[in-house]
Image (cartoon, rainbow, N blue to C red; front, side, top):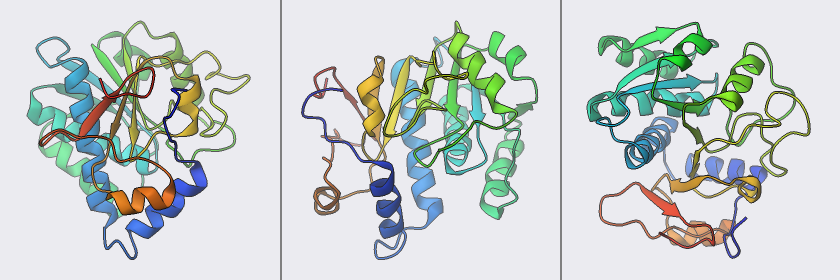
Length: 238
């Protein structure tokens, strides 16, 4: 992990979310929209649609997957052609609306992740985020193994799926050898960045310095209207 880079553990991240949605007066819709926008900007910074027009987005059943659904909508409007892999769809009304928004844009959904991964230019891993713990359940073990073996570049949202937020990659299982090309940490980097070796962005521009200091992390130096900041190997902004 870059020296001097302050991180946000899983318990603190959950407490921060609770505070943002209580005394902070944010709704989950707002936070998810800003997170998804940051994800889409990170991909644009990594590889614009002129270079990587086709994007496969793997979404899990929780908030990380919701961030992926939002990102897909923004990426469509940025000029990409997103394809969604969303096998464990939530019955929550918010997630259903996010899917409907994509369907109205004629964004395609697939049940065959390995095949779709062979025919895309970039992959976004929005399966599991900071709240993940325990074993990876079906159908995701094979998906994470495919991500680990992918010859296509991968951008992970908040955490490489299957990684422990505090302890990094698992000792065994499909995620043991999984090292995505890029990571966007939402709100603040998590302790797992100690084991991450790719390009690292921070996004989710909705926390003031007072709250950040309370939870022990730094608000990155966003420029202008940017929703993301790239962090260098030594913790500095590039």
